[in-house]
Figure (cartoon, rainbow, N blue to C red):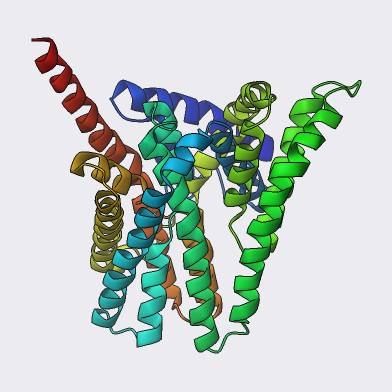
Length: 388
């Protein structure tokens, strides 16, 4: 059954992606939507099994690893201030608006703060693919978005640990912060000293694809260590990619990993996002879903855009950056699961938020297309004026 489901996913995702591009949208939008069609909510050809989730997890890890490999480290350094501004403002706006919405819905103060934190999460895995398709991953905006995502993830997890300690959860805030510090201290040291050494040692081995294997080993170990210390696995994978991008093996690993990723793992990831959609009982809570979806989109869009504007970006560029921060993805789903387990979310609210997360994920690619296209049109108009 799994083999059949994978075959269906690969066929459908490629066709849906092609149709999406022909309609002027990023291919990732078609892949997300076809997941909904294939899943239990519509055709029921694909079910969200545990093994499919694991394959999907590998897909998102490889996607972020590739993003790291293609990162311009000099541009990344230059955008550090902008990334911090976007990351912080991208948390403050959703947190405030989510808290206010929670109170309006009759939630307690602590439940409202939790809702605000959940809406503050960002997952740029979908945005990364859209940036690649738009040719913007290596741009100043792309570097700002990637840096902001790392900052956003760390701050939200620390804030969540702080909240859980107040909510009576068995959470040691000091230990949470210490783990984050240890993670970044060790990972930066390993990136600097160990990664180049490992690749040099693997390169002369008399086996096939030894360098690619070394790159994947580093990617998965970084992802595991990140997850073990409470940082999202995708952040670890991204840092592994950045570390390898500074070596002479960057192009070889990028080329081979792209082939592995985009032929199998990444399509499964994109499609599985849609497969997880559950629309049972949606009509009873439709107005709450609409309210929270609008709030989630607007708060992140404006928060990220304001942060970019404060860092000196023009408004059009700022809105483009803000649009890339809208998708909540798997990070918000993990936080929602924590909320359900700790009884900070009811089962009904959990179901509502799953749909809201899905909505933010689906609207992100077309929003980015609009804002980045506007930016390109403005550049073309200015070029025409100059040449006139």
